[in-house]
Length: 383
Image (cartoon, rainbow, N blue to C red; front, top):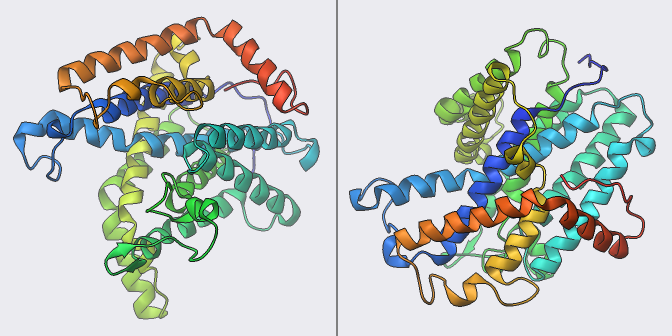
């Protein structure tokens, strides 16, 4: 694939998507932490009409982490692939990438020492993307986007066997007998493996493949190509992934004796990915129609890490052990839907105000990071 080396404008639709995702995360975490159990539907979605709005909220909430993880791979690799002429270790994006990995792992384990949360998952994902990119620079036989897509499929295919690994009907951690902090990375349902690498890392690698393709000449030949590509691929994944995957499973199994059943069982992962791609495609269309200028809303999407760190402290009491959940949670003093919605709105407002006054807070944050990581570049952006 021939890449365009000219300097590119910032992908504004990615900033919009990141802002939407972080706001959805904030309200989702608040409501999930505080809403009483009796206001949550015990049935599958839309079976009980009394829980219609809860079901709508629950479905939307389920797309937040796939969106975050997919966009992480997309924007990181899009920027990484921009400087193809620079040697690997002299590429600024490679250097910043390794620094970002260290920063994310640090905050991930400070906020949640015994678990494996989304910050650690993103950090390992970025590290893996950098390693695969380095291998690609040495070999240059297989296109990088194909590398990333193939690894994404491989990771998705691990979800089914890990999910089915059970003893007496109870899922067990894998690898069996390994230290818990390593099991948490892969599959430890009884511990604190909130975002295990399989399948979540698959979203990051697929997004990385899209990030590389955005440099292709055919992708940039016409104004609407990016939007059409994202929406079309998203529609295929959302509505036809099950038929396609099981069709491929029967084809390979019948003709070559090769089974991809584990990948086919992860059809829901492709459906989630499809919805994310549709949203990105629609936002890309909006960017083409409307001139989008820098504003407070976009600034929210460019400061996801400090927002995440602060929300973990305020809501869950991470580090300081006192937070909103100390006083209100589904376990004690639960809120009804009206109270939870009002509380979530106030919670969002707090972070909008924080972002508005972010510059002095950012300087303070960078000083702390530089003390903890002296090798970090002081100009390192929090985005």
